[in-house]
Length: 456
Image (cartoon, rainbow, N blue to C red):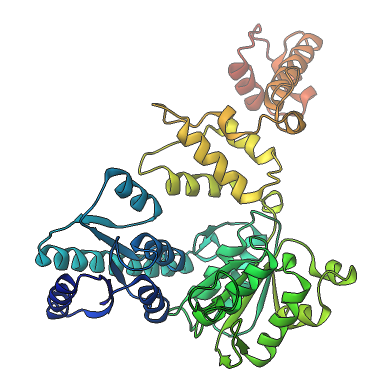
């Protein structure tokens, strides 16, 4: 297993490295934060062991960067000056363990081995789950589920295009699951064992977006205290996902077009080019053709990224998917506890248009679980919106009763009228109603209609 050891105390670094290597691990060491982050981005370790106090920004900065790049990566923090508050913050960010110095090297080696087994099992579980979902056909793919024709078409497109290196443009409203589609494409590609690097083009101002995409050299701008690799470099041999590309500034669009054409770029502040081998997947929540007509998106870039379009339907257009999504999301967020949703509530949920799509539905399920208390049934008032704009669309007026009740009452009244006209003669009543005597007798019994026996 590949281990990054960030520790400035020479005695600990040497002895712990020896113990880890004796256990069969490949260990890369750095005595400072800057070197550790450079190693992290270059070697992509399975486990990170870092001291909290060391030259540079310290172990918490390394933890933050490690989790940003791979949230499943195990990070163990080591410190001789630990506090409860610091431990809580480390766990909140994503640390796997927090250990106090001095410690026995054997204990750390055993911990690394256990975390390695857990990572291997998790990877195997993901692989098996993907295979099972593939066998299930249109019911699910990756983290997505659906039985509608609309989603079956999406799953088919993913299956067809994933093994290729074609650039994909995912189109869909906010909350439809565009990043999950991108991950499904990556997981089924020939690059699945390489990095999947995602960046939101809407989350950063123009200058920071350029720095994040292209990286920068030390001193390239005021706060560039050290060189840093950008998302293009980090995604080399893997997949780069550009989310919300419709929000990318025109100046950055020009530079992106050049990278896509030449598969090379320069870090900010550098004069030398870096060549890359990446697959690009982009996503947009707005129709790019309209933005091209409005002069807000470059036409040449549009044609460069719109090689294979994948259109994700909004939840309101996915016929029959909500009853499948609800138990799936309950299982995801229920913490192992079984929760149910009544058929009446589920019917109302199907009538609601879900403008926030699957993301809004997922938030509703999480809210229902959080507010369930001791109950195992998720309450309607926590699952459906309180906004008056939607209340009329999902609530049933008091004077409208179920159709079955109305039909039953109408049928009873009609049979009584026929019986009166025939003087209670069942054979004639059946003939008048156009049904057999047996059917009439069953209806009289089921409806509890008493009549004098008149035959012949």
